[in-house]
Length: 258
Image 1 (tube, rainbow, N blue to C red):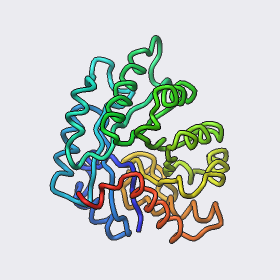
Image 2 (image 1 turned 120 degrees about the vertical axis):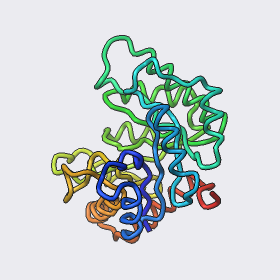
Image 3 (image 1 turned 180 degrees about the horizontal axis):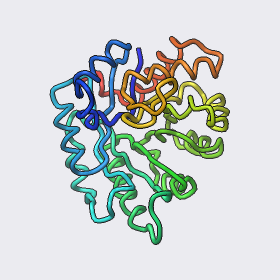
Image 4 (image 1 turned 30 degrees about the vertical axis):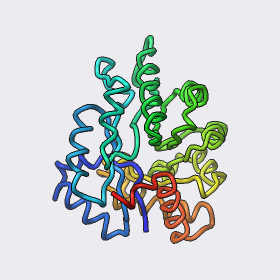
């Protein structure tokens, strides 16, 4: 049993066989559930349409930090949208200083709105951070994001950042990046992480793991992340799969009832 804890399933509509083929392939590869992540207002609606009648899927709602600064939710708007029974998380949200320059106060304001909404609803946050780890962690710590909990998704940071995330009760999600040959520092962090705080993901259609690097990613490929982690940590694939799945259901206890 595997879980893809972060997938942009709506973006696979143009692939051969479309979204349904991706779902069936995931099921054939022992993927038990897929969390479909929103990145902007349009994808919030697309994802909600996708998950509303399929208990194999759940959703997050939010606006990615790379989306234009003019696109925003108020806290009340985000809370109302996230009351949908299939929405189990807020995000993808966070800070990204790699693709944006200048005064990025608007990114921090948007991030704060998502933290507020998550705390009100007690729904975990899905965090994106790139070249902004200190500010990201400071905001999570200072704004009491532990009240909502959450995930640092597609983790690529150092051990100090991982420790800070663990200290506020967050989970660390590892993507196909951990399988890349040049990801030695991340692999060392992955060895040190407590297994009961690890999730696995694809971030598909991006970041396909080895041996599919460079191809379109899909939820079925989360098995390769589990296989790599098992070898890296000297564990079994079954234990990596079952424990990361149990972690997901502990963080999102309503999934089994939707």
